[in-house]
Amino acid sequence: MVAGLESAPSTLLGPGDDGAVVATPDGRVVVSTDMLVENRHFRRDWSTAEDVGHKAAARAFSDIAAMGAAPTALLLSFAAPGSLELSWVDGLMSGLRAECAAVDAAIVGGDVTAADLIVLSLTALGDLDGNAPVTLAGARPGDVVAVCGRLGWAAAGFAVLGRGFRSPVQVVAAHRRPEPPYFEGPRAAALGATSMTDVSDGLVADLGHIADASGVRLDLRGDAVDVPAKLREVGAALNVDPLLWVLTGGDDYALAATFPRETDLPDPWRTIGVVAEGEGVRVDGRRWPEGGHEHFR
Amino acid sequence: MVAGLESAPSTLLGPGDDGAVVATPDGRVVVSTDMLVENRHFRRDWSTAEDVGHKAAARAFSDIAAMGAAPTALLLSFAAPGSLELSWVDGLMSGLRAECAAVDAAIVGGDVTAADLIVLSLTALGDLDGNAPVTLAGARPGDVVAVCGRLGWAAAGFAVLGRGFRSPVQVVAAHRRPEPPYFEGPRAAALGATSMTDVSDGLVADLGHIADASGVRLDLRGDAVDVPAKLREVGAALNVDPLLWVLTGGDDYALAATFPRETDLPDPWRTIGVVAEGEGVRVDGRRWPEGGHEHFR
Image (cartoon, rainbow over all chains, first blue to last red; front, side, top):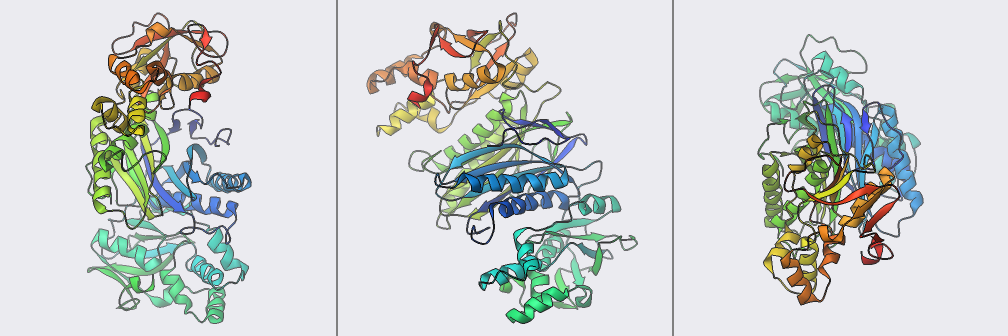
């Protein structure tokens, strides 16, 4: 299924053998794995096969970027019922390949089997190019908290689809094909980011992982967290506070990081708060939402 | 689920972050992925959770060994119904960890999700330690064909279990927990193996992949392919020609390779044939089984 795919500069031996060989000039490799199950992570009536391919690869590469590394290779394990149309598989591979091409990575291996439902497992590799990996654990009091990439767009799109609508197209497209700021991951590492993660579960939830791992409190300023006009518009139509999508919506794969205070942060990074002693995440001095984000998950 | 697992010398950053970091001192990494689905690749009434863990890791590491590399790391994606007992998951992890310990590798990452059936996806990494990767494509006329590791034992065990028996314990154990000759993979690479694969689908089938990729014919001598007394005994009891298990049975994860004729092959490698011009695999000059192995799959 994956034979004959394009190669990438780091592909020393591609699909078709017992294993692939990928160049790791840094002497270290970053690796991450993800599993997606039909009707849990995607719906075939809401997303095309190409969309699912794009999003699956985006999820995988986003984890690599969040370590401060550049994606180099992708492996796919794929289970599906025998009744699945081949055109769907073609579409999936096309979406995966397009997302690989966007980061100069290649699909280097895979495995296909039969099952009663569609299950994808993606493993991504990445190269640190001499940078230290940026973990969840390095945030220090006095650092600033910054984000780049979209927040709340995919959640708004999910809400729209859940109400049976197919527009506004911008938020529906954001749900179907996230656009993670891949190249900002290695850039943040080079800028000296002290901690970083990708926003897959929601900004407050994922920053909570940094707070926990680093043993610090993250204080966000509500007025620094931008709520785009389009999300206000969709929120008004659906009677939802759009700040909820921005603070708790996942699947946009923005990057959230902490940096030393003196860092001169370039666009598109936006400073949204500071690191303090303590624990957890607060917005304007209060735990937000009251009672913790789990309530809204 | 995978936090707090043992580390290995190559583990620079283990589970719990967006990605893991694994040392690749060679400047290249070998990577392979596999997916196992309940009732297709394993049965919970035939194998314990520990058995499934051992076998899943063995499958993954065997692919790494077949490239001539030493396993360094394993990633697990795992889907299961919410009703699955936690003790089964504990057993699975215990089996995976034990197989990792046998090769000095570690579980460095994972992902867990819910699904209506159990699906495992394993990705293994490995290090070539300066050797060239041994592919399927390098066999040349005049080379010898050699194997090491068990052949036919897992197939005999599968046949025994399929008839409702639980013994002889040796063949049933071979089905449940394969014992791939991992360390012979890098050794074969250092000895100058021209091609190699692991026997996961059956000796003739897997040697067929070498014949196809290398554009050669592999001539095996039937009398050189050992049929152990235990398999003869089980074959007699089940009225099956045990040579069928040896030549077509998979899941033992033996290594099969070709070497230059002058190679002084050490134990446990056994020479079973030669490489000639042509195509396909023959036993004593004839395609075996007549009509191709597919008939017996």
